[in-house]
Image (cartoon, rainbow, N blue to C red):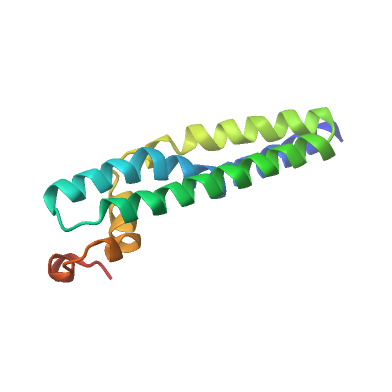
Amino acid sequence: MKLSVLLGAAAAGFLCMSLVGMQALVALFSSIPLAKRRHRENPAFDLRRAYRRIRMVAVLAVVLTVLATILAAALLPLPAVVGYLLGMILGFVCSLRRMSPNNERNQRSFDRFYEDCLTGESDMDDTRIS
């Protein structure tokens, strides 16, 4: 029974990190350099608006991840907490490549989520990915 609890909690920790925690890390380590790069390429890009959105996403994701971890630590037995933390570490290690600003997936999602930060939309019309 202890092994099944450990593995179940590890799966929950992995999912928590993959779905919520990585959003904060991607926002910090990928979106900030992409926003700076976009602003250098096109001065019409509203860097303040992009930074506000990045900050909001990062703070919200960190708060949700910390709350889930505190809740898991308070409600689960020790083997489950250890499994949960190991799952979070595994989720982090498996997603290290996603934190790169040179990742094509990050660049596409950045273009989609931050296109309203571009005040002159003529450049975006030609490069928009459906």
